[in-house]
Structure formats: C-alpha cells, structure tokens
Length: 206
Image 1 (cartoon, rainbow, N blue to C red):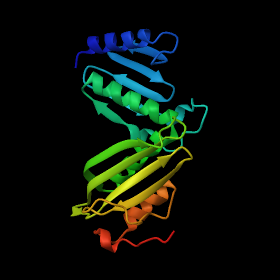
Image 2: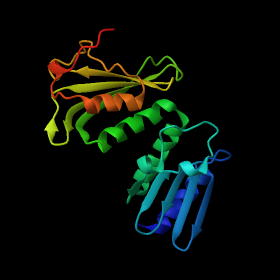
Image 3: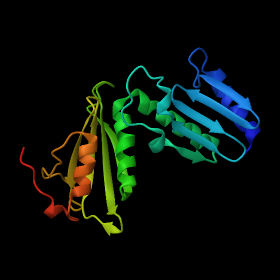
Image 4: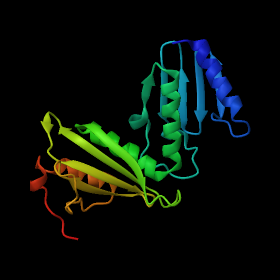
C-alpha cells in the first residue's frame, strides 16, 4: 500500500469538508497515520489500514449501545474500502437503526449463521424520522446445515426490531414471526430454534 498516497488522501479529505471536517484530527509519526471522528478510529501504515469504534473514549453525547471495538474492528489494504467502512460506522453511531443493523449481522455471523444473498431497502420513508430499515436474508446456513427458510428483519428508531420468517417458495409471510423485539432476544430466539424448515417454525398468535 502506498503510504504517501494515504497521507495525501486523508489530508485532502480533511481539508475539503471545511468547518465540519470528516476527521477531527490527523496525526502522522514514524510511518503511521491516525485519524479520528469521535470514537471511530482510522489507523494506517505501509502494510494495512485498521478501522474500528473505540468504546473506551466516551466521546458521544448519546449512549452507543451495541458498537464495540470487538464487533467493528476490520483491516483493509484498500484506502477506498477503508474510508467507505469508516463512513458506514459514522452512520451507525448517528442512528440507532443502522447500529442495530450492524450488530444484528455481526451476531448472526459470530454464532455461525451465514447467508449467500440479501436485500435491503427503506419502508415508511416519508421522512428520515419515520424510516424503517428492511433487511431480507436468504440462503441461510447454520454451521454446516442449510436452513430451508428466509428471514426479514425490520429496524426501528425506537431501538426495537421485528423478525419475520419467510418460506423459500413462495416468498410470502404467513404470520410466522419472532415474539421478541429486543435485538439480543431475537438472536437468541433464532439460535434456539430446533428446526431447519419453514413448516416446523411455530406460528405465534397475535
């Protein structure tokens, strides 16, 4: 990786945003460069770039509930990819819906649930305050076992989620949902399901 190019890129990015800089400061010493936006850290050298949220800094006026260094730490060889991820974390710290989105996907993967495809869109999008993030996750695998159902997760500004189970064919919701709305309880519910197909998922009466 070109360290000089990294320095120039970050310097130009800092200066181009005027009184509201993308980074709060830039620091270069002994072949290392550091930049920061509140709790989000960007560190680079000739070998790699590291981006993460550092919860120990306590620089946000509101409580960040789910982001930690453990679940945000990533390394990059590409300057552009590192900056895109930095912006992604900035968005997550400014909106609980995106924070929930990041945390939910991290927890699924950490617990051995992976997927081959997904879709993402907004619903109820008259204005930013009312927007609901809608994530569809398909082709699920738990460990080495395929799951014969899909899930749809809605993320709300009120720090809550709703999860629906969707059959593979046809793709519609028959009312099979997770009864929980807390993100950690939803993940626990999914992990504790002892079924691998849609028809055996219990129907929760509303």
